[in-house]
Image 1 (cartoon, rainbow, N blue to C red):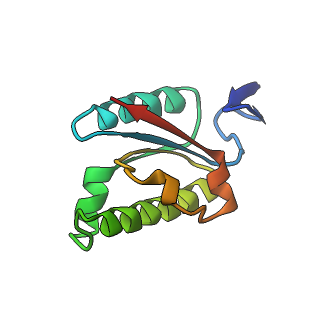
Image 2: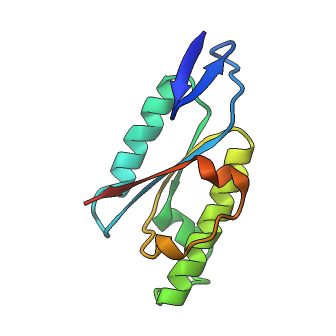
Image 3: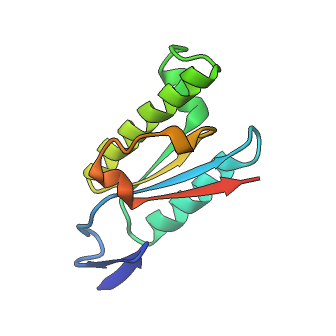
Length: 124
């Protein structure tokens, strides 16, 4: 069986496919529907046989227990943490769908070569 994911050809048994991980970052303003779109994208990819994970920015902020506030510096630092987490999960061959605000994405560093397999989409 052969399929495509963001231009990458994947072959093998549909139940145990091996491929490089990917990151799909769904971003947008507060209450724009990022999590809803993220869940739909994740379900579609999972339905196509991909190993997927969904991460919600609100859940992640809660998990990290308020270490970061809402200042520009804190938001940039938290986005870098999200990038590192997504990169780590993608390096384990998962397609990571993250729905989170990335207000200052132009300032974020590439934490890993895996992250170059990222697609970012804005929801308004």
